[in-house]
Image 1: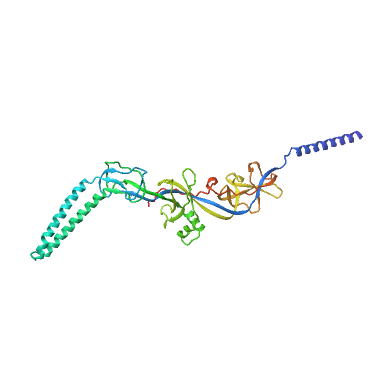
Image 2: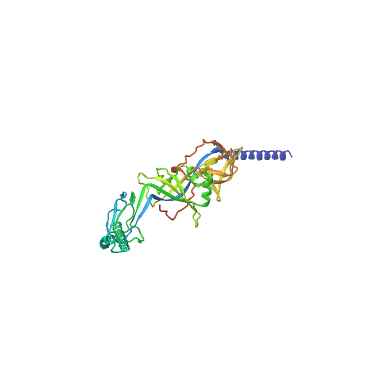
Length: 386
């Protein structure tokens, strides 16, 4: 009997010792909580950028077309050449018109002779004054015909109506052109000041109208900040522009409303006919910002880890309004004062304990060089000629 009691006591002691060792081993095997950088959610001011695809045109785009029919006798300019107002561009062959002018001038002389012949006869009351007035009318008619032909001869010499740059030259010397030709002889573009045309859809126009103060769209334009222009290579154009005009009517087919921003072009970097992206800065007051690298995607939902009072983390679903610099602007899902994990979200899971390490708040500058701005792009397929 004593032997059985002793054996049972030894067995119990062995089991207890084994369990203690297992618990000790398990405790030794469990890794300690890892440190993760965190920050406290606070409302602050931010700047976002709305972007719109724009067509660039010179301040003045003038199509050069002939007023008379004729062969191109001489082209005095080349493509891309800068010209001054009044500079000679083309000379059309006007030989036929010269012949017509000579005939018209002869008619004028004959009509003048008739008037001179009849005048003394009327003075002596030999003939009626009606005959003289009829002769004078024929003289006026002949002079008008001659003046018209002479003007057409003058139209054969084509000069530039403005300062600018010559566009393409689709016709060569010897080509027959007329006032009804499909293509113009060329285009003169004044590129010292450039105009960027872009459009907003109906929703964007409503947002724009609510964002800026003013009783009319023209008044709202005056209250808009200076805008920037992104070039085709992604760089920002060094000159700032200003929203200057907006169409009074929306396009009936698309519902879009056209805007115009003006930019100086002193270095001739911008070219008429090219494209760019207008960036309008919008100031947002008292919004919640979270770093973009703190947010992760889970089955199409944007999520973030929030730190509880016991230093465990729990994921929350966010509603992202837009971006500002390297941050997201959150419209729903976070409250001011909550603590979030700002780095290392891929290493976490719900319920995991961490060692929070407060991170200094860094507001990334909202500049084009390091900004992924909100894009509201409307591609414009037609070009407006001013």
